[in-house]
Image 1 (cartoon, helix red, strand yellow):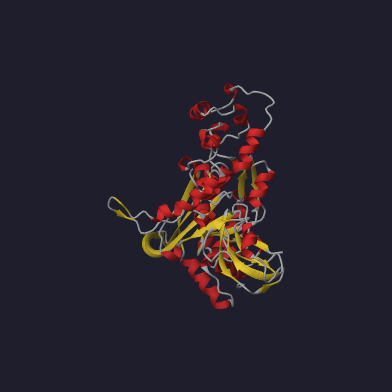
Image 2 (cartoon, one colour):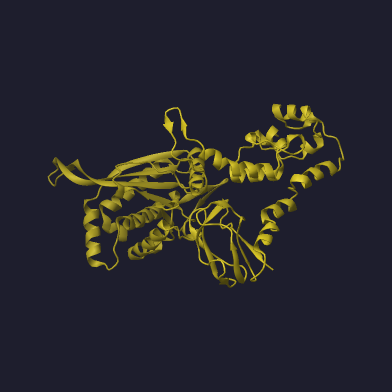
Length: 449
């Protein structure tokens, strides 16, 4: 019997995915457990194995087209089987799950509303209805008992007009596809918005956006959906910025000794040591000295970590990602250098495993190679701090000679800025961390001691 292969859900936050490359063609045979295609997930590219054996009867999705998870992408079966019939008869697991939870839709949803036993009458004053919701109920003569079963999405769980007008499954699909239910015309009883209405709206939206050419003096070149990795990054950073009160600490570091020390290491070592490798080790060492900064706030608990898992922000093909060097405190500098090469390489290609970009306790964002003199980074939740590393620039500074006299000298200076979550990190602790990190970089032999 032909089997439908779907876009997998490979991460908790993943709502959509796309094919990076097909590893099999139509007509090819595939064994259970054999690689079938590469898929773009939220943050990376994952090779997906076939969950059955047979012949690839149909490839239903071309590469680089983003679709919701659980969308059919291929059909595998015996030669001669009808792939189109298999697709036509396929019942998405998402809909099946929704029905199991009582989230029926279309005719079944309407039928359940009509047939539901009414054990007692609810007084409208007992419900937390918005003004527009109450008006909508009264104008459309809607059974108040059915409204009482609705889970409100308004302020403090209040029931809004949109909650009443849309079926549960329609709301669920609208949330995933980004459809604004206030713009959807319902075809159900009393104008209720059904699943098919949201699906139709989601398909029509890109065409409407593409039709936009100009507005006043602005010529629009293209319109793309705010979705996928970009939306995930935006949501996470917005949550971090507006939930965690950020506090910032900046200082300048004389990199004269650091540069000389790194040159000496690379003259002796077979493994090339990058500046970021030394900084990861230094950040780890500073976290060991000030472990209260190696923490996260999760719910009503502050969690302090013994291992220093240092993440490093990398701009990859699919957006920003932060691969993590786990247990940096226990690794040698050459081991860190080797690991970061591999992680950064695969991060840029979108080939990281989920466990390689999660589980960090502290992060570094280094834009020094792009010539940025100073910048402010947003904390990567649920961590409590992130260190911004800027470029090294020749700068006139005042130094004191051996005789105690001040003089101006040209030195390679680098700005760093520490962003911390002020809910759990105090100013004194953050200042001490920055100053110790500065001490390590200005006396780099201490990084390895």
